[in-house]
Length: 387
Image 1: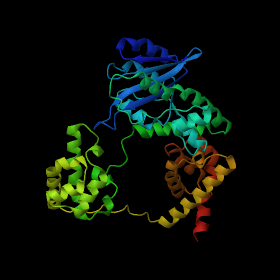
Image 2: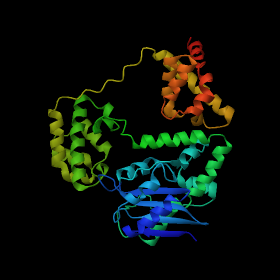
Image 3: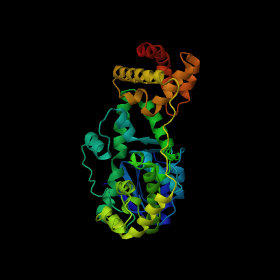
Image 4: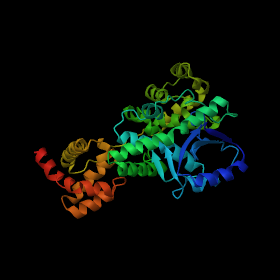
């Protein structure tokens, strides 16, 4: 029988932290309240590890205890941490002051093993023959107390992770891709902890922004600013105030009468703020029309770059077929642009090309050693295909 401890008192954490430091590996999962609050916060931390011949599970309540004693166990010097799709978990733990490191991500291993569906429930079923309940995926985990069924649901998210990791790690080793999986896990962790790459203002990230005229884009900016203020005041996610598509439609038709505005919202509860939406539209109409950001200036060697991209994609698929692995193992998608740039910059110069490839985040020494020589011939191949 598995042991499940609900940890709600600081005194419980000292012995637990010491035991975790001695573990070989720790399964980790978190729950937050991002579907219900303006700013998501860590609501539950679930951990599982081997305790002798059994599996110990701790459900930790960060609302009642300081998680700092867990820092050493979750750090790079601590045991391996096993997560499934670590991006969200890593961000929430970092925000809570206990950043995680030394990780393995079972979703990465599954993807590199060419699994088409890599969700935790799917992988646990396919490798362990166990069905996971997912009926509480959208539960508000800020609510207390936890019912017995909720505790079991939380425990299930880490109960099988170590066994799944062992199976997938063996499969990765048998396919000769363990190092590539490790590199991708490290890259994914680093990406999770970096600031978002999209630095555009909030309204410019909304689907439909680019189809609006300059006045509509100004109106959308004002509407989004109003929504953010209302969401923060109510402590709910912005989409619970009003959906993006409603704001885009209002920016397109720009009703000037309040009764038209209410009709535009339909039954959406945001209609209760119709005066504020009306004021936002009027402010947007009075603003300087917002021009659409011009597309990036294409590089002067665009035709050569496109030919090389096509050649690289074909080469990657062929190398993957030769090894019987997923193309992501050969060159991850996030590295493709960097490989193209390294080839264009360094040509067939072996030493310079190797250095350029090593500089690509997530590419790794193992790929340089395996593929640099083969990659060096792609420029001439791409040139011949472009003519």
